[in-house]
Amino acid sequence: MLQAVIFDFDGVITDSEVLHLRSFNNVLGQYGIEITKKDYYKKYLGSSDLDCFGQLRSEGKLGLDDEEIENLIKQKNEDFEKLARTEGRLIPGVKDFLQKLKQNNITMAICSGSLLTEIMLILEEAGLQPFFDVIVSAEQVRTGKPNPEGFLLALQKLNKKSSEPILAEHCIVIEDSYWGLEAARVAGIHTVAVTNSYDAEELKLAEKIVAHLNELEISDLQKLCD
Image (cartoon, rainbow, N blue to C red; front, side):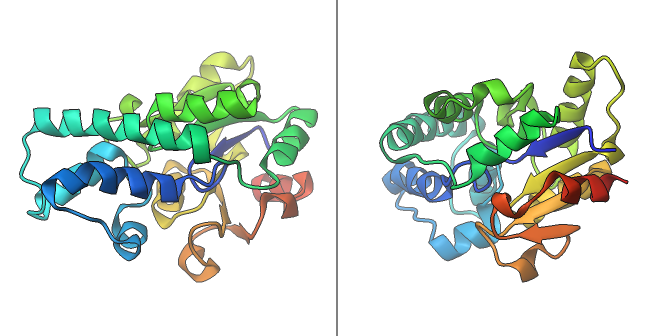
């Protein structure tokens, strides 16, 4: 029985990964650092800002202390918001898919490595906020994907709002990266991947893979949970 769908945000709902990369490079430029698109998709996509900057530090590329990294995160957030207001866009078919879930009384949530302000900015401008009962963002978890903490927290929050228990095996996560799929798998939640950021071969961990959300029917999701 399908009870809930938990969405990743960047690369699933909004086509914003390229904006995140630009923002990272805009603030890292002051230190003479640039993340290539190849490296971003190979190593950093799906990470929170804290994890991304932390990884750069552990690689010896960014010599900043914790306070300086927190300041860099604020700079990156401000830069991303400017880009999102002018260049942010939804991935085609998302709103229709959300409406289909709503019409079938399926509870929806977001679990993302982005900051809440970044998520809310795009949701509010697109009029999508009312679709989601729960939003778990980067600052609400200690460890980002592929750690399952975010998905487990989303499930916990959904249960606080539900009159009936929502079980992990009755939920589906929709992701666009291996890290997110691995986190959902460890959390015991069913998985669907969309090939917005990676090709199908790199997402084969998912139980079902589609090119676009509009390819999915409610019956497809129900089968995963039966």
